[in-house]
Length: 289
Image (cartoon, rainbow, N blue to C red; front, side, top):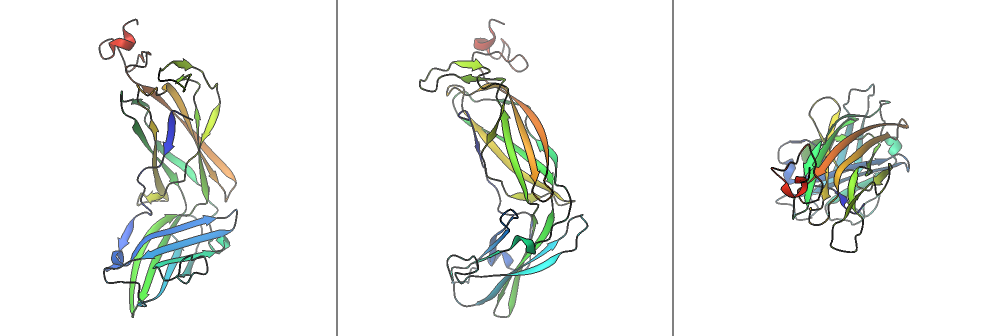
């Protein structure tokens, strides 16, 4: 897809953080990923302190993982992380503690993840000379775990609580461009937008699954992202596009999907979008209407 390029935007690496004592000086960038297809669990925590100079003051680092969602599951397990160049750790004694283990060691509730809400604009006015970003977010009902990262050093314990959505889901996003006016020749600088260039087909958009933030209640998590659109003078596509959001639950093998339609318009594309443009605000497009 040339004119709509999906990008990731400013994600935090984790969800809500509850700071205990000086934990923020000792712990950052906690990552928990689970891949049940390849039976792999990946946990990483980076340690940092204003007084920590990579000496031998840290005795150990652990992550206590507890299921705290609404499903019918009791689960609590402690994982020991390593900074010795083994057990999944790549560089020893660099303050980054890692564990690669079996995904089977994390129990999951037999609950279907679901799309709760998609905050997606119904229309968007394209800039005449600059590219822009269309933001959106997706709220899903996931599987909520509390991860407590503990750094033990010289008889002291520094802990950080974070909520993670460990739901083993996969998000797909597809686009239907049949109602878009798309430039029919990318080799020149002249914009010649034509309709129905791609037909009534949904095409996948490649992107990375962003990190989630908890809403603070229930099992709801919000994923934020966006995609870029070209300017009018750079031959941006205009008209209507349908975005299809598909959430695949790899634990249950089931999927849910929702569609959202957006109207892209801008003065200067030669098309009068009646709901948003008129002879008053875009004479060059609507003078013949």
